[in-house]
Length: 472
Image (cartoon, rainbow, N blue to C red):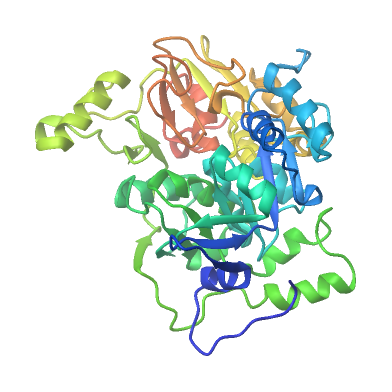
C-alpha cells in the first residue's frame, strides 16, 4: 500500500486513510477495513489466542502483531514481575509465534506508549488494539480502533475489522497555552465543555494553532483522552514535527522506503473545503490548570474556580452532581484549593512520557513530598525510564520523596494490585476518575503531571502557578 490516491472531491484526513484501507462491505452494511497492525495486551491476549485455538485458526499476519505485557505488571522495583495473565500471554505468544514485549524486555512498556515509540504505529496506518485508549496514536496520524476480544479474534485471523463508518467531528483549538497549562488541561476543559458523550462513536480530528504548537507527546495526551468524551478514534494531521519524531524508529521505513512513505504522509491532511458532520472551537488562551471534582472527566474546573453547587442545578444535573460530590466528599460551591490529599500518581498512557516527567520534576526539584502523602512516578516505558534516568529525573524525584517505579499501567486501572485504600484522596495523571477506579472508595482527582507534583509537595490541591512563584 504505497500508491498515493487522489480524489476530485475535498476529503478529510480520516476519509483519505479510510478509503485507502477499505476492503469492501458486508450484507449487514458494515465496512471491512484492512488493519496494518495489531497491538494486544495481556488482559485480552490469553482469551483471544485461546479462542483462535478452539476454532482451529491461526494469526494471519504474526509479523504485524505485537503483544505487550502492561496492565498486570508489578511496578515496584525488585518485585517478581509475573502474574497468571503474564504467564498465559507468554505461552500464547510462543504458540502463535508473535512478538511479545515481555516484562524484562528493554522495550517493555504500556501498549499505547510503545507502539509509536517502536514505529509499530506510523502515519497513515491502521491499528487495532483491544483497549479503549487506542486512539492515542492518532497523534501521529495513525488511525487506531479499540476493539473487544471477539473483534480482536476476527482481526487476528482475517486482517480486517468490520465497522460502520463513523461520523466526523473537527475540534479547532485557537489561541495559545499559558505557562503551566498543557494538553491535559485542554482535554479536561474540552470534555467539560462538550460533555462525556458528545463524540459518541465519532472520528475526531484535532487542528488549529494550539495543536501546531504542541509537541508530539502532548498531542498523544490529547488524543488519549478522546475516548473520555465518547470518540471512536481520532487523528492529527502529520506535520514536520511528526515526521522528525517518526524518523529512525525501529519499525519506520528506511532509505528509499522512507522517501516513498513521505510522499504519502505529506498528503495526510484535510483538504480545504472538506466537510465534517460537526465542528467545535475552543479558545485556549484563557485556560487555567484543570482538576476534576467529580467522578467523570467532564466534571472538571479550573483550579481557581468553585465546585458546582447542586442546589443551583435542576433535574438530572442536580442528581448527578450531588452523587459525585458525595462520593468524592467534596462540598459544593467551594474551591478545591487546600483540599488535603493522601496519594499522588504520575503515570499512565495519558501522562507518563518524557516531557510529562520533566514537567513534574521541575515542580519537585528542591522540594519535599508532604508528610503523610504517598507519591509515585511510573514511566510509560522502559525506554522512557532509561532516558529520564540519563537526565537525572529519577534522582530529583527520589530526593523529593517520590517513589521511582518500573514501567507499567500501575494505578491507572489497578489490575496489578497498585491501588489506594478506602477513603484515600488521590491526585492522578490518568484518564479516568470513575468510582472505585483506583481502589474501592478511592477518590480520584485528574490533573496534569505538574499539578500532581504540586499537590504532592504541598500535601493538598494547589495552583501550580502559585506554588512556582515561591522559590523551592
